[in-house]
Length: 301
Image (spheres, rainbow, N blue to C red):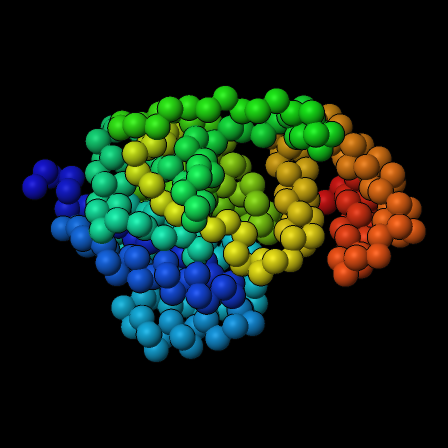
């Protein structure tokens, strides 16, 4: 065993509902084979489902904290990490699965094999086996505006394989870092309720000189968005609100303002069309999203 192989890893999870997905995640952690010490820390963000009670009864090895309020992903993650005791920290979404018994060990070993690495991502896959992400591209106002207008070019695909690839950001669905790096960069910014807190953290890490990379050969399955339970319009509102905040903080008021203009114009066009012509069961939720989009465009987050 190498000197670094004994480094323990703290797996930090924030849950909100989706108990069935969380069970699959915890079962896959329990099935991992590794010589290193492993602890799993779970923060339940005031789920409506009986998440805390089920975890306490079925997974007594999990270090559980049951919040009385929903702190958001950033707040819940920061709380989980604050309770971690090992040298490695793996942020892991509750709707992920480590598909092979050696996934965790290979992930930690890949991180340790790259001196000076600040954080490592992996090859995220959808349950059907298609690629969700290998490396992350940092969002820009220009690209996101073109995406809204349905004219954004496809991101270039990067090859799978062994080793690591440089990346612009690592998804918080599965982000492996060290306790030392986390302390230097600081916690996730709790001004983000959901989305872009991971991109923000990676930008701060890069500014301190840390390298970011992804390991294409290490696969983790991610259902993506399971905590929203099908509430797609609420998810999109959180996404746009967080993106405007991120652009304003890191790329300036002009970048955030350009996106807000497009969001407002899009809402102004779609609101009357939806109000007059939409007869679907989603009409009320769609109108709520468009009103929120208009407010965000006019007044910001």
